[in-house]
Structures are given as structure tokens and as C-alpha cells.
Image 1 (cartoon, helix red, strand yellow):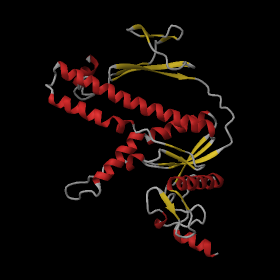
Image 2 (spheres, helix red, strand yellow; image 1 turned 30 degrees about the horizontal axis):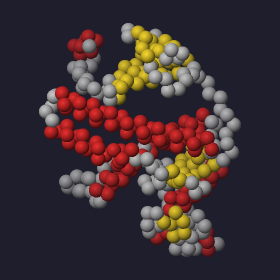
Image 3 (tube, one colour; image 1 turned 90 degrees about the vertical axis):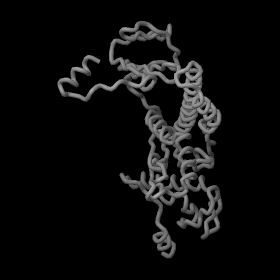
Image 4 (cartoon, one colour; image 1 turned 120 degrees about the horizontal axis):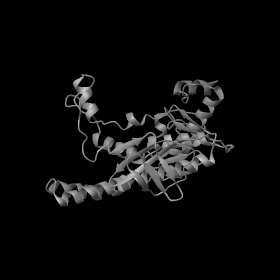
Length: 314
């Protein structure tokens, strides 16, 4: 605090702002940390030895330790440095299509159902928030309700993270090369409400889709899958998502009419029918193979309708 005021009076910084209570409660220790894994104790500078619940073995040299608060509990994150020895990757490749109904659909026909932890607890969370709104601010009962809400938010986040870790680990263990769509999750989950001058369309449907995408944690899944494949000597390759759900994997025809419904793919050219997400995964696999074979730095997209017709005529 003294340094903050010194910087302000010497015109090196703005007036110091006080942190809001229970928000961003974290502190990082860059040095002076000791660890006793046998007794499950950690010594933090100016605090001393404290017990902790070990979730995994600590490997390598400790670089820094971050202690943060989530809800009513405190977490300790230990960053270490060590050399990773990549094992021989499984010589298998697969394409993946992301969806709301099916969290992951693979080109071999397997799929993973979504967990949707927020959706499962949404009604309970809404009841607690309505209860908090009726209570007197700062009262003992309101503090109890806030603790219940914090515990529920932590449970939702932990459930989502556990699901993503298990799913990404299973895929990384069984496949060395994974092809995924280069989805811009931030843009996909942006609000469609618009402004008063130009209001958006289908706002209610778009908000529900945004909620599902964020609830399932697509971005976190891609991040986990990427570093887990890298540790095992594998690769995560992203391809252009355009027309992956409109291209027939049998005859190659690209048409919007091929997918009239969200779940079913029916080619208007050859009559091929299949699950739409599975077709998308097959097209992602083929586009990824083409990019890998050509050694292209950019994304590869399926042929356009005009190019496809020219090829069929020849």
C-alpha cells in the first residue's frame, strides 16, 4: 500500500484502488517455498507450514506457488519445471466434430454425451439467488446464502473440469493425431442482442446456444487436448470448419440441402444418409489429412459446390 501511494504522489501511477472483498483473492510466492510430500505439508513465506490435500505427485523443480480462494476453500497451484520424455505415440488418427447435442463425435462413429453441469444445477442456483435478493444485505442469513451459492458455483466448475480432463485424456491416449475444427469460440458465444437501433434476430435461441457452448467448455477442451497430445508426442491439427457439415463423404457434393435438420444428413445427390455430426467428423478427418499431406500452414476447407461439379464432370 505504501508503494502504491508513493507511485501515485510521484505521478508514476493512478490513485490506488481497493480490491473488492472475496474477489481475486490470490497471492503468488515466487521463491522461499518448501514442500514435504510425505507429511503433505507446504511452507509458505511469512505464513509457515500448512497442511494440504495432495491431488497428484509433484514432479520437477518448484518455480512458483500460487494460493487462491474459490468459494470457501483455498487452492494451491504449484508450477514446476521438468523435462518431458515423450512416449511412442499410438499410430492412430481421428477427426472430431463438436456439438451441443453430442459433446464430441468422432469419425469412427463413437461419441461422448455432454455433461452440462450448469444446466443441471441452474434451477437450484436460481432459487438461491432469488432467496439472496429477498434477504437483507449484510445480514447473517444473506452471508449463509452467499456461501451456498459459492459452493454450488465451485461444484459446477469442478464437475466441468473433471469431465473435460477425462474426455481429453481418453482421446489423447488412443490417438496420436487429432483433427478438429478451428472454431472461434469467443465469436460463437458472443451476444446476439444487438442495439436499440439494430436489434438482433433469434436472440432467445442464440442465448441458449451460447449458454450451452460455454457450459460444455469447448475452449478448455481444446486446450487440454492440445497439451496432452504434445506430451505423448502427438499433434492437434485444426482445419477450416466451412462446409464440413454440408459435404457428402461419399460423392463429395456440397449443398445446404444436404442437412435440412440438425441431426440428420441426407445427400441430395447420391442419397447417402447418416448422423450429421458423424459426417462432419469424417469431413474434418479428410480435410486434416489433406492439410497434413500438403504441408500447408493455412486451413484446408472442403471443395466449393462449383469446383465439385467441375470435378464430377471431368
